Length: 188
Ligand code: AR6
Image (cartoon, rainbow, N blue to C red; front, top):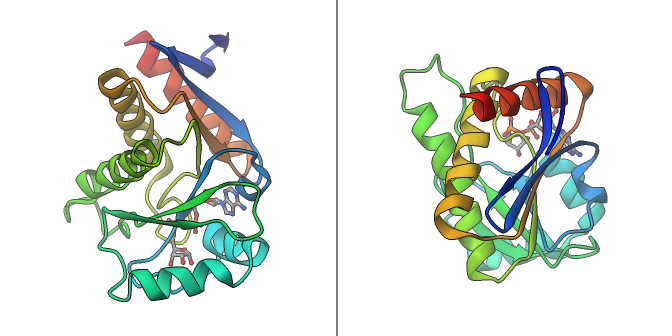
C-alpha cells in the first residue's frame, strides 16, 4: 500500500493488486487493454482513437466481423490487440452522462464488470483500464472514480482475479482524483 496524506496509489486485495498510474494506456505492457468504446464500435477520439491508431486496422476489422451489431452500453466485447504489446483489447461501453437519472451509475459499474469478466475468461494476468466515460461522455469525475474503484475492488474480492488491475489516468488531475477516492474508500 502506498499512501501519502489523503492519497493512495496501490491496494492489495487478497492475492490481487490494484494500481493507479498516470500515462497513456497504449504504452502499457499488460495482457489486456480496455478501450473506452461506443456502442457502434465505430472508433472515435480519446482512448479509442489512440488504441486504433497504435494498434492498426486489424482491431477494427475483427470487431466489425465478430460484433456487427456493436456492443450495448454497460457491456464489453474482446478482440486481438494488433500492433499493441497487449494480447487483447477489451472494448467497454460506458454511459453518456445525462444528469444522473438515466441509470448511468449501474451502466458504468456494469461496463467495468463485463470487461473484468472477459479478462478472467481469457486468463489475463494483467488488465489496464482508462477512466471510462469521463472524457467525451462527460461523466463527473469524482463519481466515476468512486464507481470504477468500488466495482474493481468488489470484483477482486469476490473472484480473486485478475492478479493485476491498473488504472491508467491520462492527466494529473484525473490521477489525483482517483488517488484521493482510493484513499477514502480504504479509510471508510
Ligand atoms: N490513455 C489513457 N487515458 C486517455 C487516453 C490515453 N491515450 N486518451 C484519453 N484518455 P474518452 P469516454 C482519458 O473520451 O468518455 C470516443 O470517441 C480521457 O482524458 O476516451 O468513455 C469513443 O469512440 C478521459 O479521462 O472516453 C466514444 O464515442 C478518459 O480517458 C467516446 O469517446 C476517457 O475519455 C467514449 O467516451
